[in-house]
Length: 332
Image 1 (tube, rainbow, N blue to C red):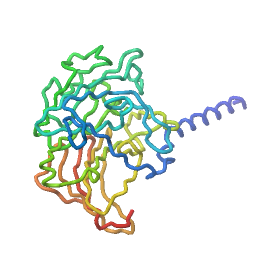
Image 2 (image 1 turned 45 degrees about the vertical axis):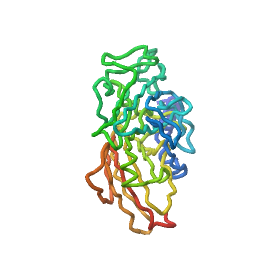
Image 3 (image 1 turned 90 degrees about the horizontal axis):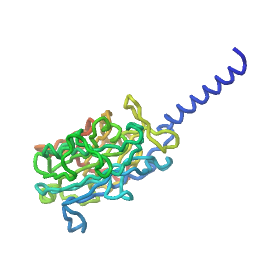
Image 4 (image 1 turned 120 degrees about the horizontal axis):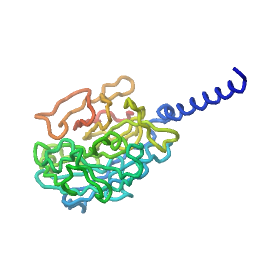
């Protein structure tokens, strides 16, 4: 083999190695616990006098936008839910509803015809449809995969019935925690990967005030998922195996949360494609960690609270827990 060919092969090998490195380096290169845990925005599906906002008729859009997942990553191309493009977020905003009071949501598709992962034919608008995971609703508003629609409802699937979905928020779907997410046929996996998911909470204020009485600043949603990034973070990668190496909570990679020495309530949701999470608390110097007091699972409360040292969540499962940090002053 002549020297020129050897040099070309060496250059090719270096190029391939660099390409692999740009895809896989992020998890090792990213410093953990440098971004504070974001508090997810909330949209009220009823008039909330304390917040002075909300309506039982909402319009929620799906937008192509950018999202910054880590201090050291550039903004990443994503699809995101929001009441407007400038307020769209990953995860989408929490939709809060009241038991037995219907919430009417018009889901609007602004995604155009260019998918982040090249999963739609060139020049064809991106179809979407929204399913409320854990909800109980009529078939025509259940987010059937064939009820998809494109931008401005120019094209619709054979099961499409209505532009506005009415969620009755009745048991067994609440009080508790649900998840809204894309469910379009053939695209649900990549649309969710792109960022189309969010938390939906059916809250009974009388019951919760009587039992828990938590102020809003001491109750946090933790929406957890895994992703991998290419290059400097401008895009996410689609691994056929579904294995991803960056763990994200509320839209930030490995964030931190400063807590006061008191009780907190966490609604923990796993929105990964296939990853299971086993949660436990670990303290320095082998100090005994406080337990989880689990109140609920998915869209309902448990018959009675359960004390446990760890919680296992499969994809699209939710645990509603209390953690008491009262005895952990000056700990990390």
